[in-house]
Length: 440
Length: 86
Ligand SMILES: [Zn+2]
Image (cartoon, rainbow over all chains, first blue to last red; front, side, top):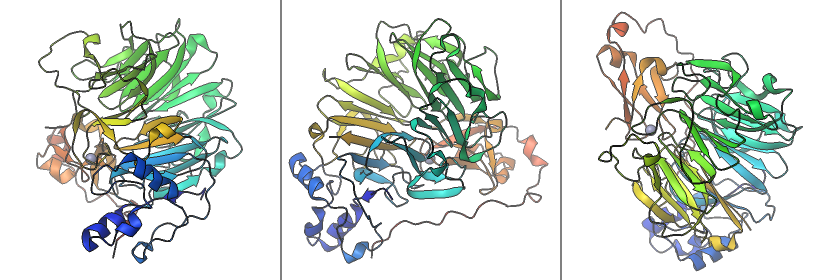
């Protein structure tokens, strides 16, 4: 199973509570805090290093998944938050309020959806786990929950370069520019011209003569970015009720074949995003376009709207009621976000300007950021100092702070590992959960 | 506070749950049964978290319907595999 390691902490917590003291001999091997208290980074980094995937734990943990093999890739992967469908990859169906370290060799990136996760390896292979009741895992069968990463074998003959996970559907892009989709198709979000669902990835025939660069899967819609196709580079399909397809001023209930998004005829788009009923695109010169459901207090937009700002953005991610955007200078901004992914209450700040809804993420004191991610109602960022900070809705532990509370502004998460030792830290959010991936 | 207002036509009928459902940001589903709708209930709750939505619908649309012709061909509930500690 690709050396999937699960350093489970809960047993140690329980033991500590129940047997009080006897747990000392085993807590060392988990590399994470107990009882919600952050560990000293130095000690815990050591702890994480000595952790051995083949260790025998106590008799109490006989049901722990056994790991056969670990390749020493040095990649480290953590998950926390809602785990009700096995999406945390911990081998269990339960929430985790603190980060737990997992290990999956050579993972180059992740995509997290409503309750499923797709991992892309550096060899272009795809693994998936979590909820599969609509076929979104692509394993060729409908499974309610897949607790461990499993290869998407039907894509083994392709080198996959990009993946996206929506609420209950998935998209895969190959190095040759082919697009595959699977999962729930009841809103046309798979783009196959019907409303059928598929439990294996199916090639989207509309793009066979095109080179697909990226796919973005939202709650019930999908966006596609083509390479080298300036006049018609962004496509949308699926539910369009909130304007998230962006090709018509009229209300479109749904379409099941890709259609060109309007307004990018003279713009070079380099990135797309979809989540909830929101859509977004970034241009090569750093302009951010959004369409779909209006951010708090604003009307839905059925056509892409360029945010009128002098800021030049390099990455943007969407929640269900907010967006995060990062500038080339390492500054983080938030759009919307006075819902559950709260930063502040904007009720007393009446304004007609969408730009006024764009706020710099507070509390960073000039510290630059290197990555951002947004769950449905929570936010995550990585600082240049190698810290992961979270805020927003925390009921399922998706903030990783050891409790189920909400946070109004970024709070540092303790992974029990010194992120300064990592050359790169990336964060990914599903609806109610979070993953962090570090590379040495 | 209601998380959102959702029209009944945007909710999906789920055979397994015998409920109308809508995605909850926690990853689970907001749910409301036809019986609830007949009684005028307008709150759909999520079994996994504290959030709820307000369902927008016409009560009259549900007063005449019957659940009896609905067959449950849904999947068996997922087997809970959470690890228990002795
Ligand atoms: Zn919920």
